[in-house]
Length: 155
Image (cartoon, rainbow, N blue to C red; front, top):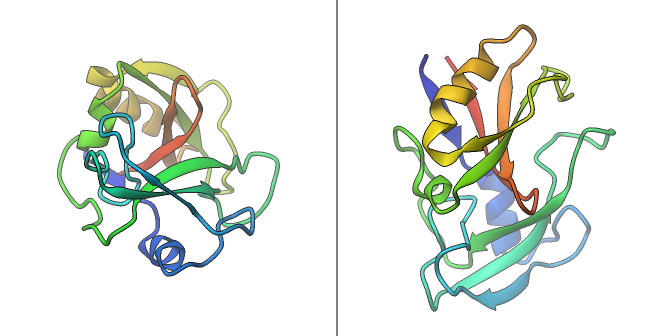
């Protein structure tokens, strides 16, 4: 099964970088990256050590509803190239495991799909979840902090 790992919506990222408000209506906080553990949700790699980064609230869903989780994400403060690579992006190789959950076309969790997954098994497990009836995408979140990492689609 071919899987695509999607960065956060480029238009939203550009809005934040230009000083727009996040999904809590707040401007992004600025910080300096300490390297590993600060994954940018645009390039899907760690924000380089010593580089400026943005911290903001993100809700990767089109509207408010009970399953539309909001949480903190990091972004490179300077423009970076949104991920378009093949395979698992570098940002998903910095933790031993992640939480994967399948969602329906209505952006609702498909019950029974959520599972903590070893980083080495992300592609296999995302493929298995994607093959389930009713699943149209899989979200990857931090297994420890529940922060959104990226979205995966099959096809």
